[in-house]
Image (spheres, one colour):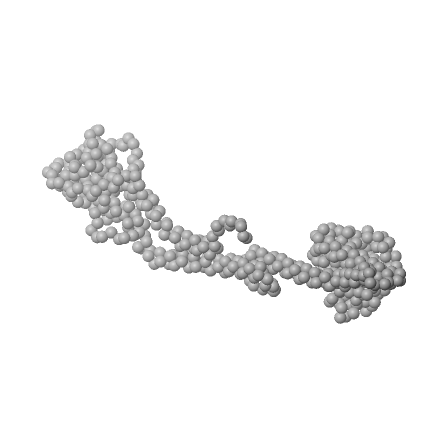
Length: 497
């Protein structure tokens, strides 16, 4: 509308495109959750190494002290966080040192056999250190000193220490690994061996955390199938949305524009997808049909009113001009005839205007309710003493004023067409009003409900009676049928269920 500032609203197609993009992006957005999973995997690796280190430290202590195993005072918990802790550089290489003899040589030999047996399954790097940080057993670096490594130095002071260091890879890192820090680190755990409150050695373990990409590589066909399923799912969602929402709404918008430009609405058998949109479309169709019918009625009504009023107005105007003409010599009889014509024509115009007022009143939705036929019969018999009115007891879904308005017009038509008897019979949800008058010609059956149609215009008929009754019945959701009995006329008032 001109002068009205409209708020920005997105197109339905844009909303659909956004939904589809989100559906397709969600699986890939899940890759960013790998950082969280990577941290969990790192801590799981640290916890596993701590457990193994504690067992080996207990075995180390038992061998060192001839079977006596010290008890730990506090439990160990994983402490590495990739989100908060720095990743240290790769570990420095060990330096040559004198290989200890005696009990350390015996402990190193025993724990080396244990580590070699376990390494194939645990993938852990084992280093068994004496009290000076020299490797006395394990999977590698035997005879080298690691006392200069910070975490080993801390363990030799009695403090268990865990760190994450940059992993040294023999081959280039795959591009997808860049999404997870956990694939670029190696976890190191140094645990002290304490006997009689003295650090006699250390267990130094390391392992690369497991990662989710190994699962993806192993299940690559399944991953590809899942991606195709997501793509097909997005396409299916898009098609269903287009088929059952976007296209019906666009079609409905097109029809509103057509009606706004004056295109007449025909019966629409289009499938509108969902029940709600189809209900909206049918409601719109009904509204548009009513508006067009009302527009047609107004146009026809205006033409008929203009035509009906034109004749008496012309007659009144002509008679008035003759009476006012000073050159016209009229005797009393002529003057009286002109005045009677004016009076007759004005009376007809008043009747037409009253009929127009009643037609407008009949279109107002105020006749809903319920009344009995017996309650209106006394007034009808008083208003039409020349008619014998016979009626069965009936309760009708219409207000008393509405029923009186309809029956008065029907009985007036019966009187004008020579009827002496009217019978009212209820048939289901309908009321049949039959008379014994002249009846209706077959050629006029479809015309008698049109405004201003009358076969007794010369007798002052306005042709508005049945039109008023029809308009009122349509207002309450009913209708009017003109039946063809063998004698007289029968009008059926169909009330809504």
